[in-house]
Length: 231
Image (tube, rainbow, N blue to C red; front, side, top):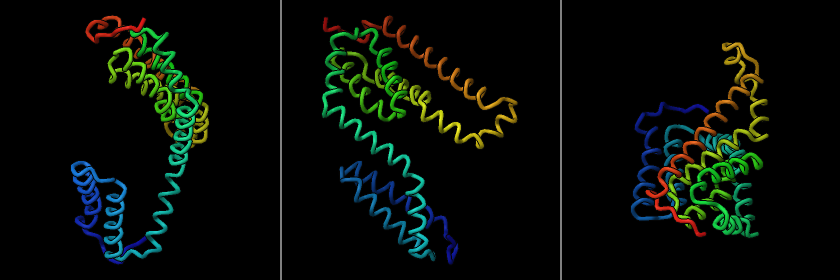
């Protein structure tokens, strides 16, 4: 796509500034719905593009290209939404909260949340799905046990991303992107399998360090966090 005339910096930054102002003032201050604000920002960007020489065919081609690039993430979000809705409708998440309140001790909730999120993320292949399903359940358990919610959220996110990196889908993506990492392997004189094992060793070591740290913090600061067990 080529323009008929050069675009000034003011014209280039105007859509971004307009979007930030619309969301910051409209959504942040007046609490308007963000969807119409984003549409207005898109219209502003479109008018600026037309004013500097772009045609509708050029804009249409760019829109389709960006949608095509973002389609894998959109499909993942749709799948995660279906998974979360299914678990909520079937009672899986409330069941996890109920039994978690009964059997999980407060001093081990962070460790259990991290390991549980890692297992779900490994099996499903998505960290978003793990956070949106068992992550919600662990947050409910932590609320009932009186555990620090920010610490619990950190444990859930850490476990979910660790499990995502161990999932079969990510391994397949790594193999498919072999050509992209080949220059780095040539520089370091290692093969693809060695690179993958080194990455897994780094992930596993940090995962175990995080678990030990959380366990020590909970055992040491049990009284300060004012934890209470339902038993």
